[in-house]
Length: 310
Image (cartoon, rainbow, N blue to C red; front, side, top):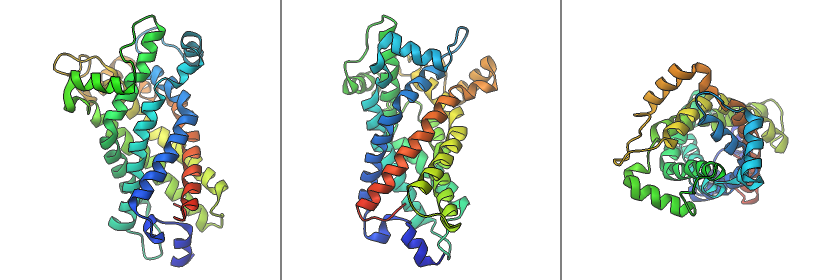
């Protein structure tokens, strides 16, 4: 295809006169749709990943246990902070990715965005977006685990999402709101290598090979992106969840792990390498439909806003 054809296929908000703020908002709204659709799988994945030692339960046991002990709504415990986190994170990552693609790294002369450039843009936008959103991610994990405490007969620690954020801030200070940011950013960079980079590359490859720029192509590309994202992101997700969920001392320091590398070392030493893929299946079962719901919504919202496809 010619440069004109590639422009018509998509390629950034500036080509249609839309600004980065519009990209942020469209991506943020699309992410809340995807998060709501797939959130139960995220709750199951989180519960699986914090298990250690003997007597660990499988996916079906965890899923049914949540319904039995907490009710069906337990599968949506922490939905609001999760949507809040994605509103910040997904809005930021997409705005950063398109800025890198269009204004910093740039396309080749034929309009193609090289895979190596896409890898840099994906990792960078994911890591930076997560750093911005880390406080909301911390609150999300804490709210999910609070539901587990209530189900086991313990007293709830938080009255609401904002109360949870307030408690964490009082206990740990502003710096403590970025607890676990290193494994979180590592995970986000790897996930976006699979999500944004893979989706962008798979979609443009499909378009160059005669596929139409429509929902079926978006679904195909998002399915592949979800699988790649789960493969790269699950190990970092296990480490991130454990670091964020560990108890802390009066100074806000973790009492189990000193940091991401220590958590990695202890996890592998005690549970083996395969423990890093604990929760892979629910992660993939969540990421694949999440990517599908997100990119279908995102692409259609862009077109409705007159922005052209991604």
